[in-house]
Length: 457
View: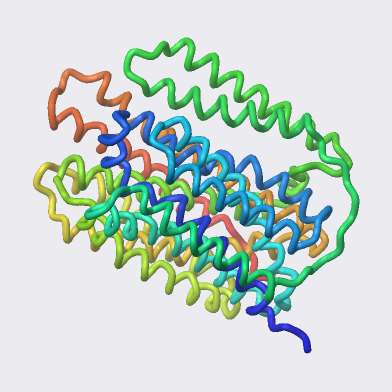
């Protein structure tokens, strides 16, 4: 008897939900971790951005591995790596080992994301691609949105280590589920992994992120930060040139010759930066400035997280019926309006319920965009290119999210370090500048959304 698509991908859904959850689960816990580990915001944010960075670097390798190894073999390897990283991070008391654990988690998540998306596209018929992308949107949107809420509820009364220990048994149980439900899909073929590409991408993106982060550090040399950033840009350029030259690249940049794919990819990247940025900045603001507890901070974000998940599923169905334009533009108008409102709301006495309402509408807008733009991106390329389009889409979103987080923290710290203001006024200035940066990013996405033409097929 042939298994239903939902049963085949069930373990992949759970594994990716856990992986996406761990992207943001430390957001609300960062202030508590900063106290326990004796680190500042610039150092603490690496616990979040390193996850995005490693996942983004690993995703192209996953595109190669999906063609070389079976679905089951790659799943057990990636889910096992994620579990090992979770155990290391949860059991370590030193910042360096926690960071290494997050890196190993990122490797597992980076392998799982394209495997999940590619398997979905292989087992669901084309006429259901919008609904299938709704499932992907539910996992890749709801899980990161729920992360700050769940961590706030846990960290209020318990150690932040529970965030790791609570995920671990679920991950192990899911491995048992996969042994019974997960099937091999697609064909395997032998390809040679290009190690030079991996070297270029790792050095390039890591240097770029470190250079931007260094620019925001108090007392750091801007010349050194600029040199490190330029090294990153150089190696990223070498990586892209290498991919164009290879017959079978890790990431096929020829995809960007397709105008629809390029436009939709940029729009999706900007949306992810807004989502990740708001999930990073808001918990820091309401805890460090407004004095909310982790639990109160998490509950403030809960309505937005739940509605985003529901909206992403509903938006997928609207996309199947009406296409991309209306739902995409409506979503971007909403998030552009909210990101314009947020920096105007920031003060020492701002209304917390108003922030909760604003965040809820922001997440609804993101839910309207995430599923349709992902489905449109995948539908814009020929079927034989989907195995290349999937890792490219996930990789650039992960890397952009990592760079966005580092950039926003750098903007915030640079603003604080280069002003005569002191005390709370200095802190508020940093948050204002970071949130205004999000407004600019959302506005750019809104403008580009009006250039996206065509239907869903």
